[in-house]
Length: 314
Image (cartoon, rainbow, N blue to C red; front, side, top):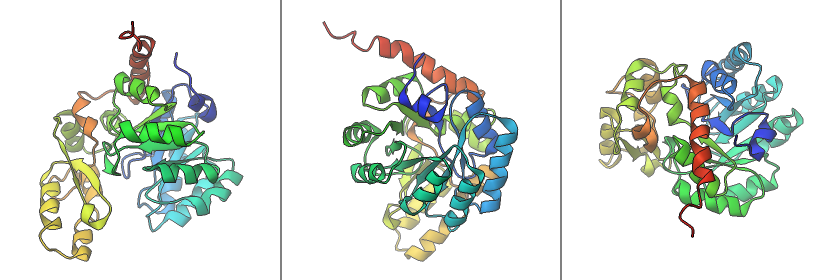
């Protein structure tokens, strides 16, 4: 069985984290992943603190295993959610869309392991200096907010730049992706889109069906003009947004166009007005299955690949 520093650091069986997907990664999904041997993550997104506290307690009612909370630092509720994470003493906090430095001391005082998502070497170095427990190097193949570098490049650069354990994210869906991440220097992986097909994932059936039927050119990136590029499925909404982005619409109106769009996709399956976040690996998702099976299968698939990694060398 594959065991890496991430397993001992987080108290998990498999070095697999479930990504923090806003309005998707709730307490039920996080508990299912943790019960399956990985690390489930509750996504705070733009939700208020009371919602996050409720989901933490839902997860605790369903698992006695470690789980975490992902805090999007651009959220208007970030301060309150950061305090809830400390009060509830969750095992792990992952962060995205910003610099978590002002919260680090309070989280660490609560015994929480802090694992920021980084999209550059500079941010990885800063998080190392601030005392993060590990970093998640997330490439632009991922769904949701994306950076400029690909996973193949970013993971290798970050692994060279820090002594912290590195978790690879973006474009990972099976054992081949896990093995590739380890060869690049990672000691764990984070998957988001793959868990959209989990039986315990409560997204609208339209959303889940779009993921399962997705093809290789199923996603597109919008929002670059506003400085916050997002990868999502090619839906009516995504195409209309892309047209508006380069039509001369002012920034305020363009920003308003996306407000609530993710929730419309997750809750209503609204193809006209909903933003269906997904990474490029959606094309590799072919069926609905229990979250525990997803966690176990990607590691079991990776083991023989890693054992045979030198088969081309004579």
